[in-house]
Image 1 (cartoon, rainbow, N blue to C red):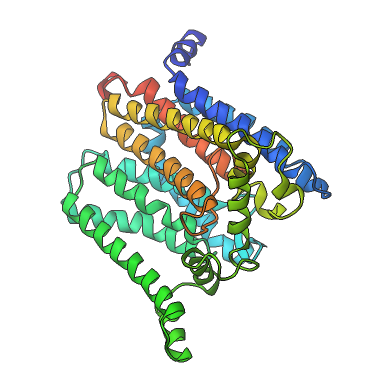
Image 2 (image 1 turned 30 degrees about the vertical axis):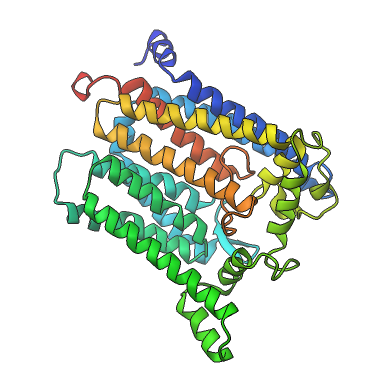
Length: 392
């Protein structure tokens, strides 16, 4: 049985900078979820900030509990968590709740968010094990572990959640030094494929050709109509300002109008006047609300908090004495960075809209619990990973 002095000793080995940055981002999240929802007439929307705060407090308990637990024991059972997530994903199309045209929730939980962490844990377990496979075998195993839940996520449909696992998997393979030639080959293939898709959409819109050929070009992208419209809004921002490009256009206005110091807390005009829809102001486009009210200084503060979260996380990976902990940290940090980068980039018009939340700040209870649980594992590596495996 663990004694109190052992728990205190482990708490002292927590990475304080990592914890402080996470706590600061959660507080900012509660503040701006409240700001985005405070003027809404719907009581369910008005109390979202309270739910966000309650979820953060519950996540903090999970965070500390996981941090005190040896991550090696947790990763050992990652296959069970992975299987649980697969079962939930399989159930979603049949029993899930449909919201805004997508069926992603079941029993009040969004399984695709949990599946991200399950995939990271499984890959860390496989890559960090003592078994030494050939490079191509690792490729096949990775494709199966990541591909199976990804296909189930695409069925919902949720392309953004599926795509975010691509850089995460590549980063973990790079950290494990697995088949570097294959990694770069797939990276080049991915870039070429993305360029081809964008090229076909651009050609279908800009080059004069028969309507039937334009239709065939769009169908050749293998994307859903709403996904094609989002890419068209990215390539041609002025094309549909009151349709598929509306949210992005209003978001850019909100960010740009914030100036250096912002308009002041609870004084954002884009969401107050309803130009930035309430359905996205507190989640996907929360950064636009933050940037309008706090300006460049507030936005920079948030970016610095993310930096002081990512750098200590990678430092924990560097100091870890075993492969599993190191690879796990790299996976978690890459996932958080990917969400942060894509969300902010789409808010300011540098990337297509994908619907990915901003970690700790966007409203979304399942995602918030997932990232806090993931950071709890990173803290566990900080506490237990400095000592070699044989000591446990």
